[in-house]
Length: 458
Image 1 (cartoon, helix red, strand yellow):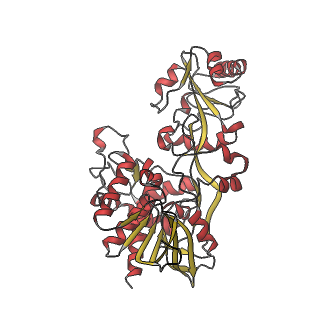
Image 2 (image 1 turned 180 degrees about the vertical axis):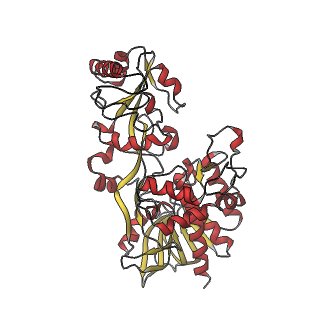
Image 3 (image 1 turned 45 degrees about the horizontal axis):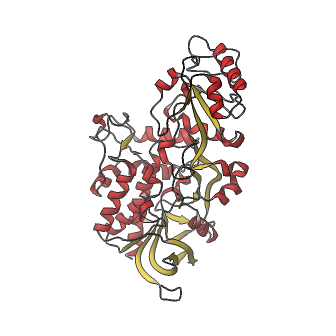
C-alpha cells in the first residue's frame, strides 16, 4: 500500500471493533451496503471493552424467556435521570430506551446467545439480560456473523487522518502493515470509543491522580479519532474531567483487567488509607453499585490506594473474587502484610469496634458507618488493597437523532455517524446504569449502520 495510491472505494466504513462497531457493520450490510470494519487492536484483543461485558439493559413490558417481570419506558427513564442528575439529552434518551425493546431478538438473530435467568447462574434482574458465555462470546458471535454475511474486517488498522471538507468526510487514512491506505467511503461510522487509555489525555484533565488510575478496559481506546473529529469541527459534549471510576483490586493488571478485578464487599468492613485511617462512611450506600462511588474517593487517597479491612464474618458475606484477600490472624499481622503502621491500624479498628451500636450504626465516630456496622473481631482478618479503576470518561461528540455528528455550528457532518462510547455523553453526562454500555452501543450502533447505509444508497 502507498499513501500516493488511489483511495479504496466502499459504501460504508466502520471504525472500531467493539459492540457498537459490529452492530453498525451488521445493520449496514443487511441493508445491502458494502461494508468494511477497521479494528485497531490485533485479532486476539478485538472487541473493545465489550469483551468484559456480561449484560445489557432493556425495556420490556412483559416477561420474556431471557428476562423476568417488566421494565417499562418510564422506569428506565427515571433510572437514567437519577444517575445522570439530568445530564442527558431527553430525545436521545427516549430513542435509546425504545430501541432497547427490540435489541435482544436482533442480537439473537445475529448469533448472540443469551442466558436463561432460571438457571440461577446469574443474579435475578428484571432490568438486564445476560449473555451466555459473557461479553467475549457475544463479540465472537457478532464477528462470525459479520464475516458470514460479507463484512470485510481488518485488524491492526489505525485511523490516522480524517479529511473533512464541506461538511462531509471525503477520505479516511488508515495505517496498517507498515503503510498507509486511503479510503473513500460514501458514509463513515465512527464507533471506536473514547480516550481513557491515553495517559497524556488523562493527565491533562485529571491532573496528579492520572498515573494512579487503573485502565479497566482495552489499551486501544486512545482517543485519536475523537481528537480528529474535534479538530475537524465536531461539537464536544460532556466533561473530559468526569469519568466512571470504580474500586478495583490493586493487585490486578494496570490495563484490561475488566470486571473480574472489581471489589464489591466494601459494606462488609472498613476502608482505610495509607495512614491506616478511615476517610468515608462505608455504610452510606449498600447497593450493588456502591463500588462505583468508591473509585473517585480512592483516587483522592495518597498513591491512589486504599484498603478494605474485614474480619472472617465480613469475608463470609462477600462475593468470590479473582484474587484472594490478604489474610492474617491479627490486625497487626495484617497491617504488616499491607505495609501499614500496625499500631495505627489497631487503633483504627479498636475505635471502630467501640463505636458500633446495636442496629448496625455507630456512635461518636468520625466518619460514621451509618449502616451495616459490625465489630471486626473474628480472625482470620482479611484485606483487599484497592485502586481506582477507570471504565470510561463522560466526554465525546454531539450527534443528532440519526447519529450524524454535529459541528460547533450545529450543522451535521452529512456522511459521518457516531455510535457507542464516542458519543455516549449525549445521554450519559454523568453516572452509570448496569448494562447500559452495551445497550447504548447496540442500539445506537444499529441505528448508525442503518442510517449510513441509507445515505450510501442515495
